Length: 423
Image (cartoon, rainbow, N blue to C red; front, side):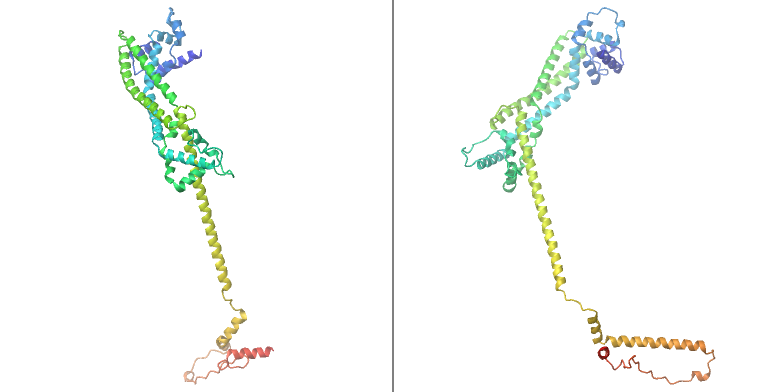
């Protein structure tokens, strides 16, 4: 029932009768047979059991359901399942072949980088030297080398406080003494991608393509005497020639990768026989740890320098604060209120101040008396005698309240007399 429903849904997408679909396949009508519809036909192609059952049907096709009518038309096409498989393969070929080229080229590039790398050998020599130094004095003699799988175990050797590992020490040593060796990660930048590509699957896909091209060749030979499939033969023949050329390029890449893999395993010893992607995976894991430990060292150095800068600034602020306090403590103290008063008196300031005060009081009193006269006396018109010249009176000397003349007395003498009276 489920299969019948799936076929019914497909027929709704086609919007064609089963006989029209049959004719489109035989005539290779590409306006009808789009890649999506070819994929639907391939998924719903008759199974061997359905082919055997429907090939024996002699009744009226109109008595069958739409799904059964479609299958009946399909089994009437010679080798229909094989033809639909070839058409489906043709639709996806270009994309698949480009993926194969890209993946083979990526793995080949990764292997070539390892074979051509000089920095990898220098780093391995340093790891060997550090390991022999750590094992110095033990019963073992210095080793002459190590299996490449040990690269993933470098981080297992740690300091006594468990804060750093051998990779931290090595990358720190390289940063101080041989910074050029830190370019190892950038030199082997293709290894990470290459290690994630399963080469065995690539080889399987190449084998499938080779098998399909052989199948196309057999079908073309089978239809050689048939005029019904002339256009089908032309299209498939043209495609097979194109596919053969593309396949040759991929096969060359596969053979090249095999040769490079053999050289890699000769140059770099592994404990066991590994697929090439797993061998590259060991190196990729080592490079990730190498890069991570180097970055952690740089971050630690940056944090240490920042703390030193902060401590230096704090010390500078404290020194500046201490200096300001010392200057303030050594600054001469200012006099008090009485000291300021005595200084004013000794400088004659009191005499000037009191003279001005007395003069201001005299002026105020004068104007007050004149105002009272104006109010009490009636207003009279001035006569000629009022405008005669009158002698200008000589101003009397200003006298202090105590009877001292300010013009002839010093402020210091006044202060002394005031102090005598208080006693």
